[in-house]
Amino acid sequence: MEAGVRPMECEICGAEGAGYVILVEGAKLSVCSDCSGAGKLLRAPAPPRDESAPARLGRVELEVADGYGALILGARKRMGLPLEVLAERINEKHSFLERIEHEKTLPDEKVARKLERELGIKLLQEVSSGTAVDVKDRQGKGMTLGDILEIQLRKKKE
Image (cartoon, rainbow, N blue to C red):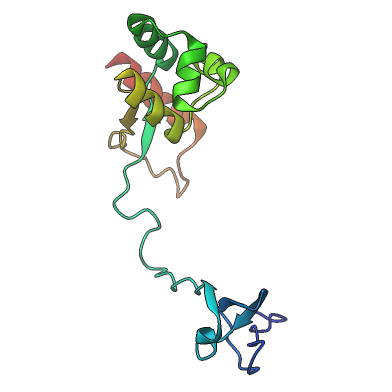
């Protein structure tokens, strides 16, 4: 336990470890597990996280496709949808969708999924894990910006 941090005390019995929040006659109380049945349970303590497991177990990293603005604009025009109607259908602001179409703003995953569903297009793609890179051990030093530039130039030539 960190220095200066006290565990919360139950507001009913005084025991340490009050992780539950209950409602008793209109008052919110922090209570222990023994006293949690004394009122309506509002919040239980979060289960302890397993620090050894990665935070995004099984989750695939996604990125928005290149030329996403043209994809959105083309699909919208094919469907004959004005931008205002599309904005209303996916519950986003007209000006925000306009910035996305002009590629001034990158849509987050939630907005991209809404656009994919409404327009029938594919905007999100898995992030490529990259290619295997041979990192030279130059007297114990790691990769430099110059090394990264060389790798990028090699990729462009391929």
